[in-house]
Image (cartoon, rainbow, N blue to C red):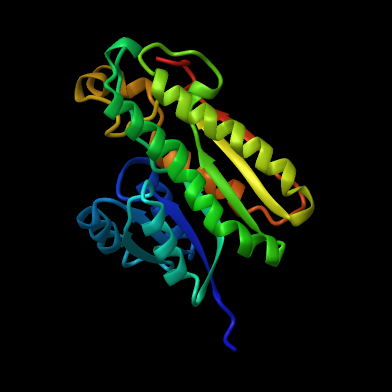
Length: 237
């Protein structure tokens, strides 16, 4: 039986940090499966990365739909081993808690927290069986500091942070690394054009975030960096 190819699965790979992660990994010869709800943007990423040594394979996927996540994973795991899952998909709304609609709160929790848990649950059995793998969660500086107008977002990211810390302890003897990356303000479409126009010179670049994540992923010793906080030199906005 042919050995399964090793792949990196990146959620929310169509834009922002996810796209930068896909670019960095493919540049370094990695086989990347990128998922997102917007297949047209994923196809563009594939085109843009076609000259690099790695491979980018796009799949349309809504991580909030557990059945779809299950079907997707069954398909890719037939001939592949997800050696690294990067939970990156995320949404937010910059509103006071009293102004958030229930629909907005539900979407934020389902994408940022439940979607990441669904994906994690799919890759765990293979990783545990192989005693190998990494789960990297792209969190946020809200896990380190209180920011107003981010109550639902903070709940989702802090929830994933707590889940990942418990998971890490449960996997200590399985040789599966659980790594949390908490970036501060980064230039992505999650911010309004007004904010980016005013503060972009103080915000981090997605490419720089991706380089740090790749460096952490590619370490081949028994050392693991478990928690990383990334902030602009000038501090939070």
